[in-house]
Length: 332
Image (cartoon, rainbow, N blue to C red; front, side):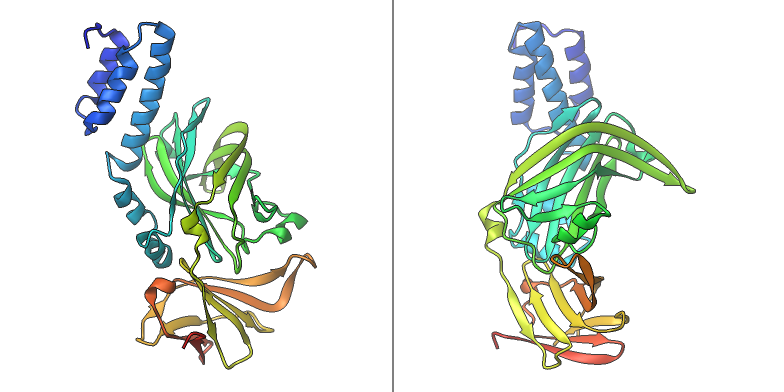
């Protein structure tokens, strides 16, 4: 480039000249900074270049191929990790949405009958080491068929949720002013959605210290739309039988395993083993809800375990307070 750099250009290049940035990205940034003589266009492109570099460098600590990132994102959950390794994950092509001192986007989606997982990337103009995490205010997720996937509310709308628990956030990465979190929820039968609509009225960065909350809030009114791709619509679902009628239904999918059990008492001391003796972690045990009656079902429980179709298990043994229940595949 023949155009002389100005003072701001020198600051940017001095900061990023030793970063491990591929030549294709460097050339694009160079063009964004120097191609145009119009000052306003240059400033706009400089801002975009800064956002692009920040999102690449600070979340992962350097340039990392997407496959490597995705492989490590779900390491906390064996089943979802297996699903991702078998390409049951959607990479969402979305630009960062920026307002005030906040930028965010959705990066990945995993959704089948049992699991709903959205990966969010946040960039804030503050050091996140002083905070514990981020939440979305008045979060509501619906689909193109009018199904309510998640609504973080305490009112009657809660019973319309396909998610059997309030959504929860799990921090995957946190460094400097960037944080990557996963929004998770579980169900017995998430619908086969073609599109998802994610609305929320603000973003809150928070920390609770000795009962005292420290927050930083970003107000807004956001509605994100995500088209669900084919690989998430092609769900693998397998059912198991049990001779004991107390075990009403057993389902295994690309990313999880769920059991519906009838019991007048709260279920405790739950274990799950396969026919090779491997034990699988219990994720949740929750009382079932009835959408139509707007109430919890007194004697029905939904149990989630950390196994999936890719484990290729022929028989499982469910143990409840020492009593064993054999679960065998309907396909055998």
